[in-house]
Length: 331
Image 1 (cartoon, rainbow, N blue to C red):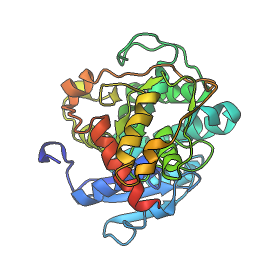
Image 2 (image 1 turned 120 degrees about the vertical axis):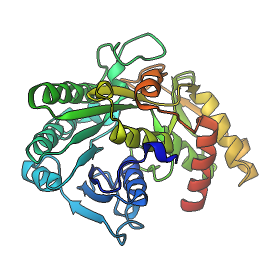
Image 3 (image 1 turned 45 degrees about the vertical axis):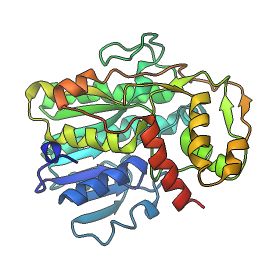
């Protein structure tokens, strides 16, 4: 990573949801940079094994706790310079099945964290927003200041996060930056469970020579974004020093879209170097998923202009890295 956007190593950083896929990669990058890192996670969706390589490192602290408890949030924010808030219940289908719990974690928990950050004197609060906020907006590419109506309870919760963050800056002076993630993938993303993301789920199915199931006809498209691009954007948000760059929301993506048929083709191409039989696995098609947005493509101009964002991994280079990691770690 170029030194230009690496944060000051003296900063103490709280990563909520730090045992999760994105959070654990952020913890790892910050420790590598020399920062002290406190990870808060209740391990509801995060995994202790994601933190095993970090547990013995100097400057790392794990707190087992839930953001729905305000006192826990206060303790977690104590002595911290910045917060990278990743803790949330993801997944559109999960929120449709259980909107109450999604709201408790993603809205009430988020508010607890904002209040705790304010009261403990945190300098900057950087949080995981979501491309689901664009809702039924038809235009492509998605530009930060043009959104539609949300299409799921999950999308509502993530939009409310943005509204709360804006109010906390205007009312209390807490500097915030929201990062609207677009379909992040890469190492440590869980392929198991009812709400597994599409890429690790497809990889696991193909590795087992099982047919991946595509919801719909495979023409739905996404701006798939490799984890290292997401880490870069979080570090850039930490180091942003222009006033106009703060208290904003940014797309975090590569700026290209790939449909699900193309995605499976690429996965089969990269996986068959490990097992040629994977190239012959057929695809199964099922009904479209409720609440899914047909197409997603981000404009990344705002991040480029205000934060210097320069994502290094496109879909192909990111998938090669991810496939290699899965093959090594999930056999």
